[in-house]
Image (cartoon, rainbow, N blue to C red; front, side, top):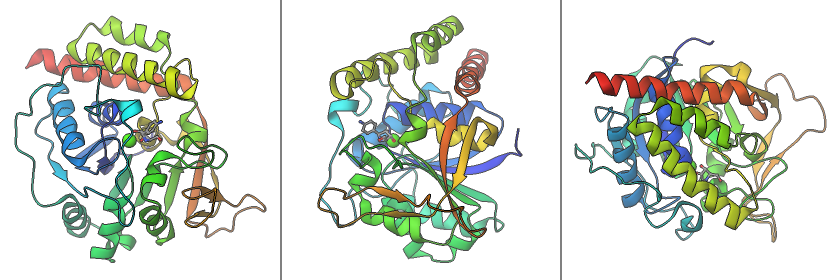
Amino acid sequence: MAEQRTIILDCDPGHDDAVAIMLALGNPGIELLGLTTVGGNQTLEKVTRNAQSVLVMCGRDDVPVHPGASRPLLRPVEVAEGIHGDSGLDGVELPEPTRPVASPHGVQFIVDTVMGAEPGAITLVATGPLTNLALAARLEPRIVERVREVVVMGGGYHEGNWTAVAEFNIWVDPEAASIVFDEEWPLTMVGLDLTHQALATEEVERQVAEIGSDLGEFFIGLMAFFRQAYRENQGFDDPPVHDPCTVAYLIDPAVVATRKAPLVVELHGEHTKGMTVADFRAPAPDDCRHQVATELDRDAFWRMVVESIRVLSVADERR
Ligand code: PIR
Ligand code: CA
């Protein structure tokens, strides 16, 4: 286990974002300061509400939700309705938010939090399009040297899911992704090469069912919808639960093997727009700031996720 990591989770819930929130809240290795939301899987309005509902389900509505950017820097809004449904979190009943959203704007919250903490204290985790992180780096460039690390679910060095070579989060706002990848902070790309190993099997669902809690049922409802969507749209038997892989990497880096490689985002290719290009030609230079996630310890990963749901369920019973 690594030391505790203090994070802001920038997300667009989203079935797998919801699981990332559960893991961040249920594992003692993570201190979650707040959620910022970004238009992606669904509109900003919907994903923000979803984030609030997930916090209510986790018994943690004390965590602030700061809405961020509603649209990409340059391109039109594109949502993943075919995968996440009309609400962005179809398959479960979503409890009403118990608290209003927080101010300031998500981008300002990122800036204020990073500037208000010790240098190297805050890690930024992004599980949606990178619009908020790009805007934060432009609003206050000094955050870049103060952030400990940026961990992104997005891209892939061999795989795409929205086009043959582009992953959704990068595809939606490639210019923002390019800004975030080009800044001088250390960046770990947890791309599809890694997250396609994180399949929610029926065995995983059985373990969650055994917990016998409302949150467990919520997870199972989410995964049932996600599985069906992935069967119909992507030819998978079990759905890959992308986003919590970022959090798992921070909890215990041994669970996610990485390799250093310089990364850039393709902005202009006729067929390759939104592709993340990794340079594996030679051993990466020592000062390489980029690394890609390569291999997941699946058993350890799912143990963590199931345990976090158990921890949150027990805390809920006590309330
Ligand atoms: C988008 C997603 C998941 C699957 C598809 N097909 C499209 C969302 C997830 O929330 C994750 O963050 C990322 N975007 C995976 O592409
Ligand atoms: Ca997401």
